[in-house]
Image 1: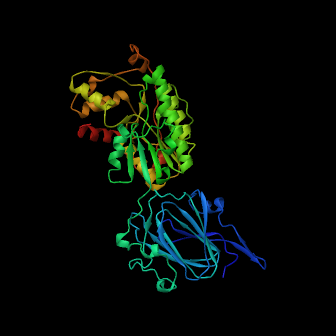
Image 2: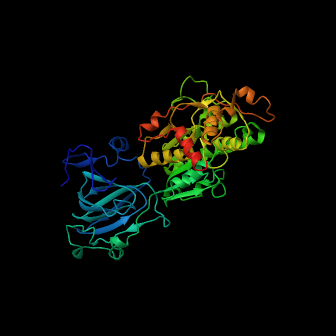
Image 3: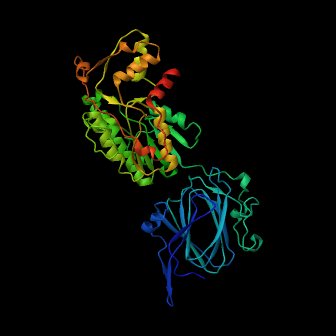
Length: 471
């Protein structure tokens, strides 16, 4: 019998993410009423804002009708409109909780949130039972499904009515035992810009993750009008945008300006639209160049953009576009060092060749190694940190480019005094091509990401390790 007057309360289960809810049901002599799905109240209690797109109803007129165990690649919100069921759920997701079992009875005063990949089954306990569920994707023959036999000995579900005495479909009878089940893999992650400095670091970071895909422009052109159909995007959980136009000075030319806006702004807006439509997390990498460097002290995430040059303007526009996706991480960094040509390798080469460089000493910031950016991105995704902007750089004191150069010289066994510090104006005084203005202060405050449990590495320590391993 339906219980009236309960409060809206979630109850954790033995399966991660599987949550039972008590639902308030209001009844009198005329019948009863309940709010079966109330987004604002339920998400406030911790239910994922899973974005249902379809409502299905299964009606069974005979006691003992038994269905499942089916695991689909989408989330479900399951409840009973009338009648009563015994429900059984088995975790069929790839991971440490694979095979975990949870059972309970549902009547109209209870509902359950079933995460993607958790097998769902039920047995009717009353005649004329209607079982209703919301799902956040449309059925597709191309989606990955998994099934478990209702009589599996490992799951050992104690059905109230023996399976030998109930109505079961031939398909359900033929499903495999747990040992032969193909687990539902995690949602895919797509890394764009996979051939760049950060892309290579992300390849290394996710080397143990078969659900992570890597693409460059030849694999996926974000400027293509076919982007919306380029993938079955509902199979993806996140897009990591490691692609960018980074030729800061060339961005000041006619051709460079066009290319910078296309890659850093227009392309990001297209990705954000895909993320919004398909409820994906968009990870976008930003830059200290969105600021003019005039602040006295480190920039925090809430500081408004005020870029100086075209590159900074396009990066700021990309940040705004990325922020339109409700599920977004904008990872703002500075002075990036990774595989390929970079400042540290240039200084090491000059030191080895006996060249004494002049290096700018009035721009300050911290080096950030791509390995740390990749590690930070994975940390945000794995921990489910609050969405938003995060500064991520190496730790330690701020330095100038000239001081970094001296540290490179010293670490490679050369006299650091061979490096001469000069002002930005003097350094570019004889330049013949277009020069983008640089922020003098690129120092970013990283306190916010540290509160999520991420640990930054001292930039100088990282520099020594980078050089020691062939930087």
